[in-house]
Amino acid sequence: MDITKEILDFTETLPPTVGVIGYGSGVKPQAGYKEQDQRQIDLFIIVQDLKRWHDENQILNPNHYTFTSRLFFELPTKFQHIGTDICYIPYLKNHNSIFKIGIIEEQDLLNDLNEWTTFFLAGRFQKDILVLKCDEKIKEAMERNRKNAMIISLILLDENHLNIKDLITQIVSLSYMGDPRMHFAENPQKIQNIVLGSYEELKKMYLDDTFYLVYNDDSIEIDYAEIFDYGLQEMPSGIQEIFKNMDTLDVNLLSKKDLLQLRKSLLEFLTERNRKSGTLQAMKGILTAGPVKSMKYGLEKIKKAHRKS
Image (tube, rainbow, N blue to C red; front, top):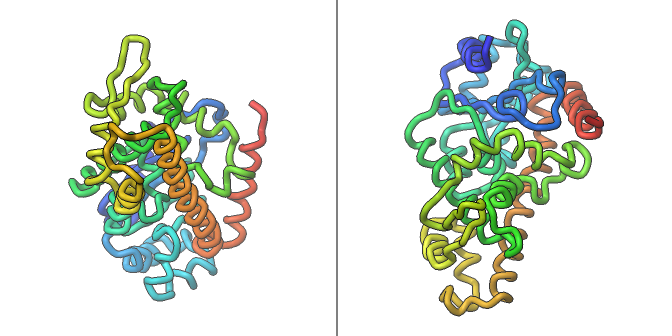
């Protein structure tokens, strides 16, 4: 059974959804992973009402929930929106497949894709994903999110690494800056593994003729004037504020010092977003998955992270 059919077969057992999107090493190829590492299929399940969806799913699939998670989903809706707005449930079996689902309301997803409110979903949607179902609002937000990731990455690129591969690597790295899991629960080669595994797809996603030029040797030339004009008007509001707080808004007067300060401010913004959302999500995961499943999942992540290839 191919991956698309596996996912669609599983989602037919769930309550109605707005969108279904696959991601991660079980869906998209990553270098450095062995076959036994890719058993769990990761899905984003996008819904209209988070609490109502869980209420319906507890009736359809009571085995999806532990004692702890049942109690959690009985709490008022505001508790389900703590931190990252998404709730994960791992180790869901369907035939011979195992799934981990992250359930999120459509409006919360749109907020993060458009405004980088937590950057938790936005960062994951900047990589190669498998879209099986979504509406036009989500498609438009995904395009805007990727465009913004590309622009930020162009600004962050070191002058000695102006080429397509380094740009793609910079884009992939955005969601890992400051993420506490990178210190112990993720493969230190995670970013390179994603780039190598999905390089051609990522190149197609981020090829652009407005903000940079590409030469035959894959080197690029950045149009900072176009970037600054776009950044002041179209970027997430928090990023726009960083641009507006600069000493000069005239790119022709931008000094090396100004560019370094802009990079520093952008890195601080992303690092803080990732640190906060990663920490809060890990804490919430203990409630939504249950302590036993959470510990099992964490230990497996650490084991894979430190396994020698």
